Image (cartoon, rainbow, N blue to C red; front, side, top):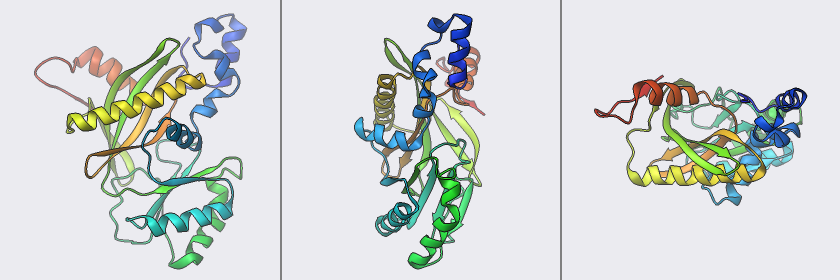
Amino acid sequence: MFALWPAAAVARLADALGVADRFPGAAFFAQGGGEIGNNKANFRALAAAAEVPILPGRVCRSRAEAIEATGALLQTSGSGAVVVKQAHNGAEVGNQLLVRDADMPVDHVGARHLHHLAPGPDGITAYWADRWSWASGEGRWPVVIEEFAPGADAVYSEHHAADEGTRPTEMGRLLYVGRRLSHQVVPLDGVDEQVRAALLDGGTRLAEAYRALGYRGHLSADALLLPGKRVVFTEVNAQVSGSLHIYQSIAHGIVDVTRSPRRQVVE
């Protein structure tokens, strides 16, 4: 039994059909484990525990905390910008970029919403008065605020978590145009072995952390490659991602990217 999304309803269906033993992680998913694994606030805590590098940021559970965290991060951030992330929402729909410099290049990043902050603390307070409800899902979820990394490249390391352990499945690159996902390339190109090793190591640590929670199945550890070849992780999608069919079925099953001459798949 294979779930594209690890909902509790799938675990209940497996149980009703008498095939729960064919659905890895069924007990975890039946108790809402899919929400635990696909929560960006939980990700920051798990990444910190696994000693995986992440961007400076905070998990906020109130509007007052969000105001304070935004001001502190803007003060210490070299870019003068931060990203606000909903705990739940994918494909950059749940991200908003807050910038003070209207001329800052931002088209290459994944953020559906863009907001130009008014100067001073009043601009921050006014923003959160308007957007806390959106960011927190009417107060249901915590909100992630993290430093914006200009000039970074979006990459990922995908893994599979099973009862016996985890294994890497593929690494790739994501490219954005107008802050929307434009295309992706597999396998990962244009990086040296130092970057590849850092991406694989961080992805593996995260996969093992999520496996220890009880998660079973495919997951994607998303990361940024910063200028200077430093890799930092931004979130884990503990689900079947939109990349799985591209590398599993097409790149490996049809194109065979391991053969010579070198080839890649672009979507």
